[in-house]
Image 1 (tube, each protein chain N blue to C red):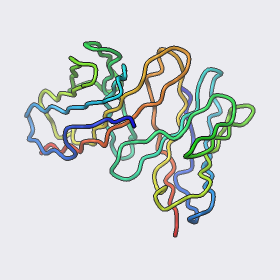
Image 2: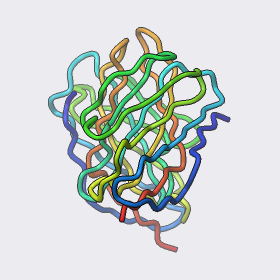
Image 3: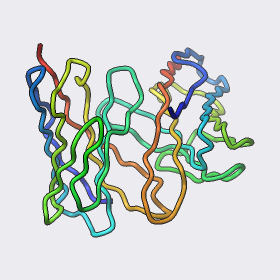
Image 4: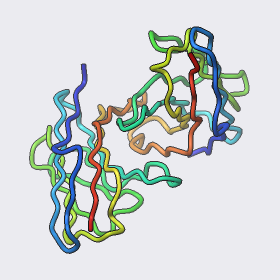
Length: 115
Length: 112
């Protein structure tokens, strides 16, 4: 079974703090993704990575950065947390390849509250 | 990516088939139809995908119309654990197939 794990299920941080969200996958997937999910807005892509040390901005990268030093690990960083970053954060991974389209496997999510 | 339209909510009785419709009238030839579901407080879970032909796996069947403008996800014998939000997504295949655009989905309630 594909397993995507996230470091915390629930996290409470203060405004201005630097926040690290960690994601690890065990299926040797090339692609990894960070989304946030908010009521009424669905899932929105923040960043994704298709290889170690490679990253691409998604739809809402402002206020976030990412790090991928190892293939299995993809970190999301909130440089200075703000209350509007209170959300559910979801990590996903998938194979990469041409032709066919590969499904994404999601972790359980981290519910971050910034006070 | 083509947009999809789904009913906001549906219900069905436990043990009966759940048929979830999706319209994707602007789908283009190389776009796949994907279905995911999200059970409360969990990450989305992949169910099935298809391009032109109908598909079946251990979880569900996917029926795509001949003109590909709509599809139906069928859960043949719904259980209470199938209560979830179901998302229909169309996505381009190939190298750029990184993006999933989740809409509002259909909230399926399976009644005992």
